Length: 158
Image (cartoon, rainbow, N blue to C red; front, side, top):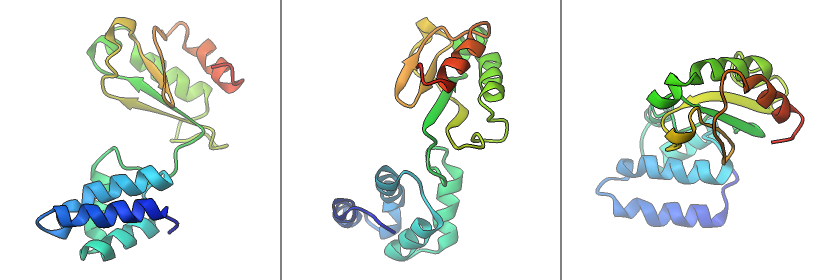
């Protein structure tokens, strides 16, 4: 696994802060994901060895918590808010349209460029429905404008 030396140093400094090595697991996983973009099978084995736990215990944490990813993010990670104000203004229809138009019916698009998923509140309720592409927030992406929004994403206009 190709972790940056500063990531390894940060992990080595982090572990002794916990009463037991295994208690540092989530923070170690966050550090790894921040460095390499996901938690690979190799990373699971590395963390298990580092913390003196089984691979299954680490994998259990990785698969339980939705913030951990086992695959790298696509070029354009599209997140659609599904919390109350966005849902009431059509975010579920927006999500479905974006998935269809970007070719993400089964996770990532075939070319690996897009992934569309639901997220919880983005604190943009006044601009509901809210959509985030990577780290850029877009507001008022309605069911009526979702198809045109998807086309703009495909052509790199957003």
